[in-house]
Amino acid sequence: MTGRSDCGPGPLVSSLQNPAVRLARGLERDRAAREKSGAYVVWGLHLAQEALAAAAPIERAFVTDVAGGSEEGREILARLAHAVPVVKTNHRVLESIAAGSGDQGVVLVVRRSPIDLASILSRWPTLLLLAHGVQDPGNLGSMLRTALALGADALIALEGCADPYSSRAARAAMGALFRLPVLTGAAAPVLAALRAAGLSLVAADTRGTARPEAVDLRAPVALVVGSEGRGLPEAIVAEATSRVRIPMATGAASLNVHAAAAALLYEAGRQRGFKGAR
Image (tube, rainbow, N blue to C red; front, side):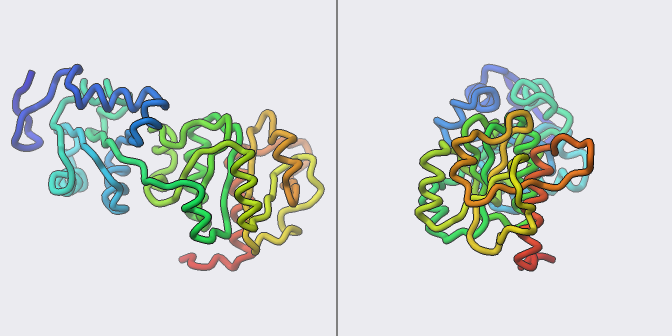
């Protein structure tokens, strides 16, 4: 079923069974589909702008008239039209792909950058952030955003983490997913590879005795944080070069995992003199 759209010339796709729509909907709903295809879904004008600015590998854009309701939106639509295949559609179709996207009027299918641990280590990273068991995609996305802002070279999501390529994580990351190398992996081989590459492991641990400022974070280091409820598994803590405890006021039991990661990243940045910061 097709018609005409005010968002530009060309047919209007209004069928929920359109092959491109079904593919995008599958990517949004199924982590296995994202991993198999190497593509993921993001939505919203801000993320579209960030994806274009970062020259992210956009495969397809779905847009509605809503996206062209502002000068910013019209500019984004024009740039998308010159860069990628654009599917003109309606609110109902966008909502079938990703809930909430209809109010923004744009959904993108983006290809993951082909990156693995070996390629990251070949760049001689000096600051990595590792997460274990972080199940909330909002927390994981916020960690991505902070890691980029505070100079991390990559984020590695270990077992038990939400998918960093889910649209919820991508929205919390606010564009960092397009700029910061992100990968997933199992703890044992990842930690072994980091040790072989000469990185020390600093684990956030409420039982730790060292404060972050007492640990040398200027040398190549991987910071690792765990879930708020369980913390890090003992097997990971046992591999740590240092176990740090973030000081908290009396009566506070724990920090949000994103807050803990931010505190450690900030301390690493401080020790390094915030090189490259504005």
